[in-house]
Amino acid sequence: MEIAAINANSDFFNRHPYLDIETHNETIYNKVQNTTAKRINFVRKQCARVANATEITLQQGFFPLILLEITLQLWGALQGLNVLMAPNK
Image (cartoon, one colour):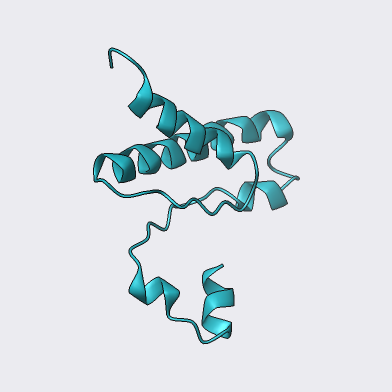
């Protein structure tokens, strides 16, 4: 998304604050060393990162616009919302 904005001569990412969350996307392409079972830990870590960033963004009073590379990361975003909205936290 950021590359597309740059290519379109857009300064969107200069005008708006954003978090660039570290990913483990390289594990998807390295199937020789990382079988599906071995990648699940990376998926869990990535979802936790997205959840944490979502929670912090909401606590700071911002609305999180979440742009995800893979649909599975949506689980992390939803988890971050759930943590903040859970009763008796």
